Structures are given as structure tokens and as C-alpha cells.
Length: 278
Ligand SMILES: N[C@H](CCC[C@H](N)C(=O)O)C(=O)O
Image 1 (cartoon, protein in one colour):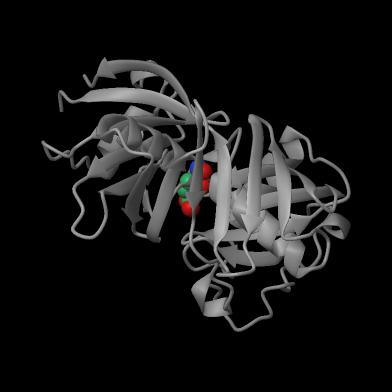
Image 2: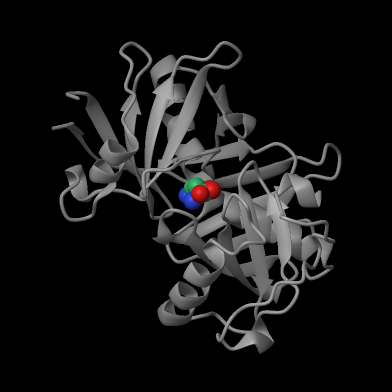
């Protein structure tokens, strides 16, 4: 598996990124899990493993493995990192990156900042997907023993990957986020699992967000989660259609553009180190 890699992060959500444009790289689930391992993985492991592949319809195809080894549809923070690499390599300001969750466009937005057009949110119950028909602006979700009062009628949004967004009156601590997130991640209402976001609305243009990610746990940032949170909050009239989303690892600027229903995400990119896979 001797491939060079770049270790990067977007607002603290970190990735091992492999360029498979010239030479294929197709890890098994077990190999992906080993690379992501915080104890034994290269460069301290990662939240997601990212492989850049040739694409028939875009400039590249981005394939995403969660730390648990599962292949998933997309990853917002990684799209900024891959967008930065591709624009740097190609001497261009804008690239089209295909994912299993649909096509996206990444554009330079400053020295170490990238704006990604994530496409439209998917809001129908069977697009999330949910196991039964519900109004995704506020779904009926019975959570177990965890203190339910703050966990009523969350929103459900897909950005290509599934998200449930709780509107919570405080910023949850690690213990609550972990306990509740892990309880809901595999709830039977979500046949493909779900990323669990806790949105504390501070103002109509400001959301504090923590996310328990499907297949990765509590991360410092979740780009698609920030997009889903803005959409869910705007649908409930809690925010306008644009907001700064403050995550543990930094700030993401999210806009749900009225003209074409696309969600735009702008945020930082950081290169941590490079290396060669073992
Ligand atoms: N855990 C997510 C994939 C990574 C998404 C997140 N890291 C982002 O920046 O969007 C899922 O299973 O759908």
C-alpha cells in the first residue's frame, strides 16, 4: 500500500488524503480502519480516509471512508481540502468534485480557505432516508433514557449523507453528546445510520454546533453537519438562510441560496504533514 499521503484538516476534522489519480488505491474496510486508528494509524490516524480518483464527469472523484471503515457518500470538510489540493495542482481557482452523494464545486476563497457548492439539500423523508414517512422539519424520535426534554422533534436533512439536527437550549458537553449521539446513530428510524447534530441557535445568523458523526464519533467539525444544521434551523424559522456555524474546531460560513436552493459552505483548510503509507 506504499502510497504518499497528505494529512489535512478542515476546522479540525482531520483526514488522510491519498492521490489515486495515477495509481489506484482501494483499501478494504479493515485497511481503512487501520489507517484511521488514532493509536496505530499514520500521522495519528484520522476521522475520515479520503481517496482522490479520476472522474468521467468532474475533475476528480472523492471517495470517503469513515474511521469505522465504512464507505460513505460525502464529506464537506474534506471537499474543501481536496478542492484546495486540486486547485493548487491544476493552477485553477475552481474544480468539480464528484462524490457518491452527488457533484460539488470547490473554489478558492483565500490563502487557506475554500468555498464549496454542496448542491441542494435533500428534504423528503425517503431521501434522508427515514424508515417511515414523516415531516422532516420535525420528526418524532423517541430517545431512550437520556433526558428527553431537550430532544424533541429534531429536523432531518440529507446533504448526500443523513443528518438529524436537534435544536438544543445549551451547548452540550462531551458526555451528553457522546451518550446521545451514539444512542441515535443507529436508531431504527435511520436505515442507513445518521450523523447527530446539536444546534444551539445564538442569533439568526449564528449557530453553535456539536456533531456526533456516523462512523467517526465526536469530531471537531462536520461540514455537511453544518450545512444540515443551517437548513434545519432556517426551515424552522430559527435562523435566516445564512449563518456562521461555530464548531469546536473553528467557524464555517453556510448559506442556503434562495436562487437555486444550493447550500454553500466556506471555511478553512490546513495541511498538517505528508508521508508515505506503511
Ligand atoms: N460521518 C459522515 C461522513 C463525514 C462527514 C463530515 N466529516 C463532513 O465534514 O461533512 C457520514 O457518515 O455521513
